Length: 97
Image: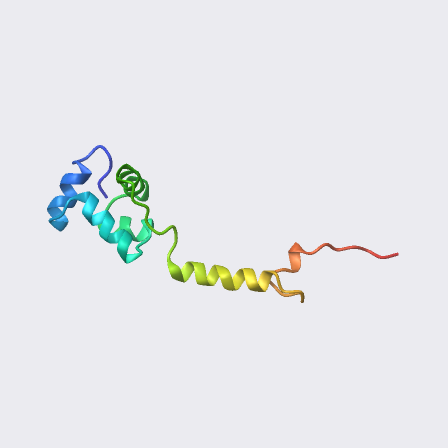
């Protein structure tokens, strides 16, 4: 993966995609792509992609949709009244005498 000290990010994106870095990042935003996925696609570290997005005033998705769905499922199970493997250690245990 290229880093901040190698060739210029903007030039590499222009060579690879034939568009300016700002346009590519904007297109990724419109597609709902996350920072992690964008970094994999572009061949740069996540922090490099974030830095350039911030420079252009573009924000990509924080997480993939699939991750947020599985997180939502976990939170629903965690907040259930009945004890289960997701919430058993979060309950107060009181010894009644």
